[in-house]
Image (cartoon, rainbow, N blue to C red; front, side):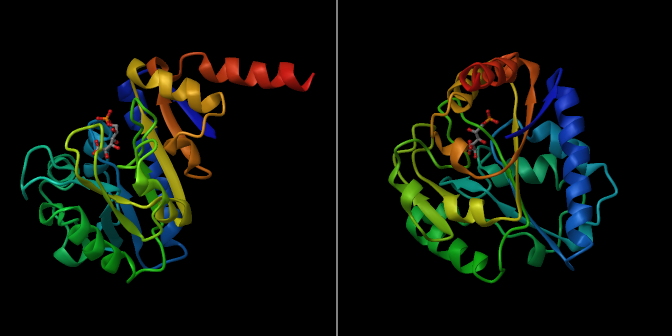
Amino acid sequence: MDIRKAPDPQALARQAAAYIAERIATVLTQRESCHLALAGGNTPRATYALLREMDLPWSRLHFWFGDERCLPAGDAQRNDTMVKEALLAGSPPPPAQLHGISAELGPEVAAQQYTQALSRIERLDIVLLGLGEDGHTASLFPDNPALAMQSRAVPVHHAPKPPSQRVSLSMNSIRDAGERIVIAAGEDKREALTRILAGEKLPAATIGAATWFLDEAAIADLCDNAVLQKQRKSE
Ligand code: 6PG
């Protein structure tokens, strides 16, 4: 885990936004377009608000979603509603560059449609992810059958975080992406991070190599302790 620690959520957003912009630019030195999957939830809002004001190569960006909640289109609690407000307000990308999840159709139909859309690209270049208090990421929750599904997008039922029905990138899609960036803030994420740093295979711990942007409240001295424990074990 490549951990980048920030003193507070605002500094975290600044660091994450700068890094995301830098990684997009790097992708575009090799590819015509950059396919970026966006995280849902609340944490990324501050990062998205900074990215919105940056001089990104918008015409070469394709926006995908890490997951979507099965709620009516336009519902305030949908992740695409948050993204449209926080990141895309004022300059929405052309429809051909915004690949939403039609989660209002229900998990199975929407997952199948999103899998078909994802199948038109080789892979996602960058996947932004959040971290749930139980160690979930996207809408891949501990012990949920969706974790083992192999298609590019998967239907999710019985999610412990409402709504219970969702659509998510599969773990395969996340792992196969060019790179992964996790953004997590707040004391309520500390337990999940503690368990992950202790080696527990929570969903967020199984995404593969990733860059983790964490604020002080989330990580505190966990990282140092984890490193010290490993050092003690190896002595
Ligand atoms: C969702 C998200 C979910 C989120 C985490 C963290 O639909 O809720 O996709 O994976 O990223 O639960 O949420 P917060 O950023 O709101 O803490």
